[in-house]
Structure formats: structure tokens, C-alpha cells
Length: 329
Length: 199
Image 1 (cartoon, each protein chain N blue to C red):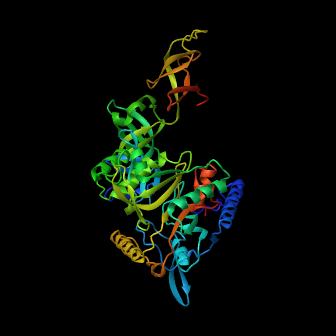
Image 2 (spheres, rainbow over the protein chains, first blue to last red; image 1 turned 120 degrees about the vertical axis):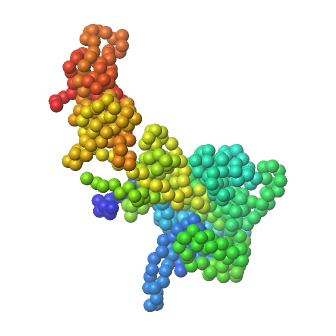
Image 3 (cartoon, chains in turn cyan, orange; image 1 turned 90 degrees about the horizontal axis):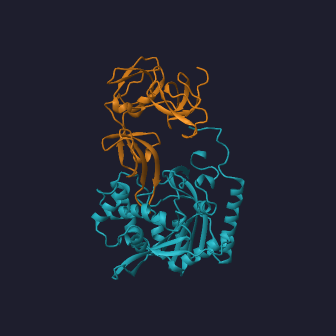
């Protein structure tokens, strides 16, 4: 129900100041590190193909024709088109939109910091993220922990995620959530177990990077060879996530630049969407063309600014850091 | 009087479940106490529901895929007045002017039998039209039918003594309370609050 009385912001004036300070120190950091700020459009004529993310759309008249525009779920595609055109290192602070359920840590509209570094692998990018956190928080004692996906899983779930049998994953998931006995998708079970058993236990004191994901959970990251817990060589994806005080803050990759692979992945995603009766979307073929022209070797990361603020200021709800979110809009 | 359409039992998806929604889980009517949206990784979304089984009272958590749906449970809370008991059933009447009567059995009444006072208002939870549970008001005023005269200075029991009330409930009361006095009792804790004022 639209209640006119709810005009007040849900954030304190102190929070407004803290947010302004954070944005300023982020800009300072990138200025010092020679990374260019870009400001690409929120609207696109195409969208992501992801089967699990829903997007906001709008119609607008352009040259006498009504077009469907999609609101970005991240600035990634626009920024990659810039990278392929020779922009060099770039970063962006922008609003992104995800048509999802809201929660204490989910807002339909939120702020993402996303940046790309040419010639850096994901290890180097993780080191830069740590430097950024030290810089913007003024906390010299921040020392990020590093755990591989397999290590974290073994430690908190008790099995090696790369070799565990489907049946044992089903049983584990069911034991802890009462869901899973009928689930045949391995990654769904791994993700549920990770979220239920690993996430609450990592990054409680220092921020924690989880790296080296199963390749099936990071289709667009480079693949690397690692040594499994059992001592045998396995393939893992050069993907990482950052967790701090129970919150997922960032997601990054050593980017795969293969345009053929990208197009194949988009097609598979689209088929999955059709199968689930989800709305079809215009594939971003312009991104594919850009990749054909060549994406320089780079790593990229997307970091949630609102959640970072929540961690820094010990806020329990995202509405404490966003003035007019969700039903307060 | 509201008529419940029982032929069409609505399905609600896990992501749409609000606090207070009543759904069927494993054949039992349950109330949703909390619904947390969980998006692990970049894949399938889940909802972690905190549920209360309305038959057994058990509170527990279960996770569902966001798109999974459950049958809505035909559960309704109605304000009713307690009339009388015939020893087997306890009879209530709706207070909305419909004169609708319901008979609650021993299981539905449970422990709350000690708070049943004629003409008092209770919330009766109806499941498929039949009483599943009753909830007494938070506070109730009941008369003392039995208690020992309190001996002044008797601090051996922390300055209190047992008393029996008209409904059969026993509560601990201050030593100065006598038979015939009407007391205000907190039904949630079963404790004496004060002497009843007025009424």
C-alpha cells in the first residue's frame, strides 16, 4: 500500500556523510592508481542471459519506434565494450538493478563499484582490493584471509566439493536445510551448502577471499590447474569472492576473453530460460562482437558499496544505508 | 459470516510467503514465522522458512527453492466466547453476531483448560472448519477458591503461597491473598500479576 506518510529517509545524517566519505576515498584511490572513472548508461538494448537473474525493463520511443530497454544488472557489458575499444584500466560507481526478492541485504536498486585491470591476474586484483579496503577504511590492520573453495568446503561442510558423490551432497543438504534429496543439480547443492555452512563461518574477523571455484560455477573465468585436497591435479576457475562479517561483498574473475565461448554460454543460458518458461531477452551480440575484436588480458571485480557500508557501520539492514529503498522509494 | 472456499486450495510459492501465512507441510497445517530470501552464489534462489506446526507446536526451519509452492492451509483464527463444557468437548460461540458454535476437543484445548472462564473471549484456531487450538487472552481475572491463610512473617517460601482458582489453575500468590479475592493472572507465564481492579 502506498503510504504518503513514509517520506522520511531511512538513513541517518551521519550515514549520508559516511557514504559521501567512502565514495570520495574510492575516487581518490583510483585517481592515485591511474584507473579512469567511466560513467556508462544504465539502459541497454540487450541484457544478460543468466537464467537466475531477472531484470527490469522499460519501453521508450526512439526515432518513432518503441524499443525495449533493459536496466543493467551490472556495468560489465558496457565496460567490456570500452575495454575492447582500447580504454585501458577503468572503474565505475553505478546503480544496478535486479528484479529480485528484497531482504535485509537485498535492494532492487543498489550501488556497485566495478573495475578492470589490464595485465593483472586475479591474485594481483585481490591484493589491490585489500589495498582499497585499507585505504577507504583507514584500518591498517586489515589483512585478508585466503581460502580455496575446496579448503573452505572441507573445513565447514566436511567433504571435498570436487569429488563428493551426488548422494552424499543430497544427504548433507537435507540434514541441514531439509532440502535436497531430489536435487540432481550438483552446483545447486554445493551453493546451498556453501551458503548454509560456510558463509556464516568465514570472514568474521578479517575479510576472507574464497578462490578457485569449480569451473561450472564460473563459466567466464579463465581455467587454471590446481592441486586438489587429495593431491591430484584438477581444473578450477580463476574466480574469487570476498566475504566479510557474514556478507558477500565482491565477485571477481581473471576474465575469459574467448568470444566463441561467450556466445555458446549465452545460447545455453537462453535455452535454460526458455525451458523454465522465463521471459526471453535480447542477447548482447554487441558484446560478443566486441570480444571478437579482442578483450585485452585483464581481471575484473564487482563490489557492493551498500553492503560494504553495512559492514563498516555494523548495520543490520540495507535500508540503514540507502535513503529510499524498496517500499520506501 | 465468511464462507471458506475449500474446493480451491491456493498454492503459494516459497518466495511469496509472508509472516503469518498458513501452509500445509508434510500433511500438517503450519504457520510461517519468518521467511529469509537466500541467494547462494549466482544460481538458484532459496527461501529459508521458520515454521510452527500448528498441530504439534513444534518450531523448526526448512529451506525451499524459491519457485517451489505449497498448498495454503485452511486455517483461520476467530474470536469466540467460551460457553460451557460437557466433559468431552468445550463449546465456543463466535462473537461476530453469527451465533456460529464450535466444539473443541481435549487436544485442541490442551493446557489452556485451566484458563477457561465462562463468557471470556478466546481466539479459536479453526483448521478445515474445526477447532485446532485455542489461545487465551494475555491476562485473565479469576477468583481464588482455595488457599491457606498466610502467616505473617512466613518467608520460608519466598513470601508466597499456592492458591487454586475457579478454573482449577494453581498459581503462587502473595501471603495477603484470601479466598474469594479476584486476581489478575498472566496466562503466558501462569503468574500472579495483581489483584483485579474493578469489573
